[in-house]
Amino acid sequence: MDYVLHILTLICLFSAIAVSLDLLAGHAGLMSVAHSAFAGLGAYGSALIAERLGVPFVLSVGAGMLVAAVLSALVSLPSLRVRDDYFVIATFSFQMVAFGIFNNWIDLTQGPFGVTGIRKPLILGWEIDSPLELFLFAFILAAFAHVVVAYLTHGPAGRVLHAIRDDEDYAQSAGVNTRKIKILIFAVSCSLAALGGAFYGSYISYIEPRNFSIDESILILLMVALGGAGSLFGPAVGATVLLVVPEILRFTGMPSDIAFNIRQCFYGAMLVLIILYWPKGIMGRVRLGR
Amino acid sequence: MEQLVLNTIVAASVYALVGAGFALTYRCSRFFNFALGGLVAAGAYFCYFALQFPILPLFVSFFVGIALTVMLGCVIELMVYGEVGKRGGTSLGLLLVSVGVYIFIQNMIALGFGNETKVLLPGYVMPSARIMGVTVTAAQAATVGTAAAALISLAALLRLTRLGRMIRAVASDAELARIRGFDVPKILLSVTAIGSALAGAAGLLVALDVNMVPAMGMRILLMSIASVIIGGATRQISVPGIAAGATLVAALQNLGVWNISTAWQDTIIFGCLMIALLLRPEGIVKARIRKA
Image (tube, rainbow over all chains, first blue to last red; front, side, top):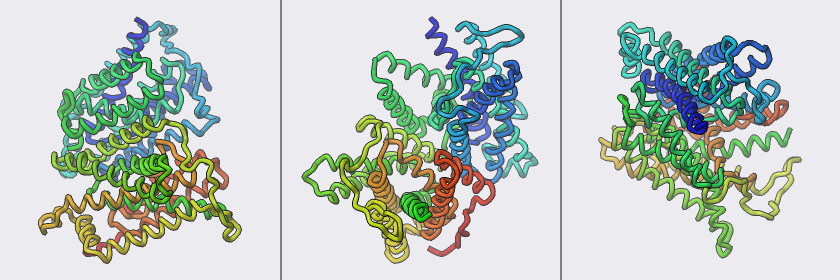
């Protein structure tokens, strides 16, 4: 039972991070491969601020989100100068720099050893520590992320985002301040990813740079692509499939490094096949890469 | 100090080799081909594989390894990229697909050969010579020599031959080239073959000089992409631009070593690439528009 709850908790957390990426990739047309770096900024920011300064959980998570929102400018500013594939390279570079900092700034992040002993969430004196409570908390968090994304992608705000995605020059000529909106949407999306990351760190109680590498960023993007970009619940569906399927490999009793390689092969092949034959994914509205 | 210069030249040679392949495929098919990173590793491992047959002389094994890499590159071009293009995929879609292809190749290599670090010629003592006070190994000399030869012949090919003229035509406007009756898919295939050969050769040379792991290609490719963007060769295939960019990236990397720990090398380069994309996306060498 605890095992099932663990998987469900992970699904909730990854859904929150994936839906926040969909806000960028699916709705605003800003493909980013740096999303796990932002989740990492939230996780490291929150864990280190809580540990060094002893501030309560809620404040430290807020601080982690703030760090991610501010640093998202490093990715959103290039998006004003370069588009499409050049922009992907910019996010790629950010991902590599962030990973380098997690991995090499030993004094701050303890490098490859990771940050250990992160406390469980503590809200108003209520410590969330049983598997069921943690799952419920993760569920609320995922629901919150979905509500934020739904709010921003429906109605007038959504129309503006979609206009930027479909024809940025036209949106601009129609009087949309695309610069301001891109910067804002990045800040929102990245702080949501940071929220997911911060809770992930607190849930697992241990984070290491590997959790926030480019592989994870591509996995999150794959969740969006598989579930379907531009749909509200697509990323959650993608996250569920991509987290449950590898668990099956675990039961075959394969050595873990081989299982890892097989899983990665599977992800790689899937990315190719989805873009080739199934660009809308399971329930997408937008054709990814078309 | 002399050692740093040597390291810079050797690293720049590798980046220029892969960068030339990358710039060619980028200009002709207009997408960031991450699968080249997989081909770098494939070049090293195919050679390793060919060396398992001791009947073959050393050079023949190397040749077989690179030939296999070229075949792999062409198969990917025909089976994957050609399909995406036919289905109306954008450069972004092709980029994502190539990332998928890269992940697939890297992990297939890992499944076939294992994740551990391998040496191409175990127990072989690389001959070396002292030139101007630095020890240069044969592998390093081969790397610099191959890169120089490959870049010069590439420049000559592009400038002097019919194929080179056709490649430049596709690079400057594929649609126009098609309308003029060029067999664009065939030209793309030859570009892929050249690019794969360059990537495979780079992988082999790195494996010869240092060692190999299945993930080796990504870092080399990323450094090469940085070189090409910084060198301005994404706007126009320019061999001097690629060489300049590669030298700058390699120098930055090795300057970093001077007083900062090597672990920060990649972070420095990508930080620079981010700044470059922000401030001067057209590259340092201003592309001149020439008629193909």
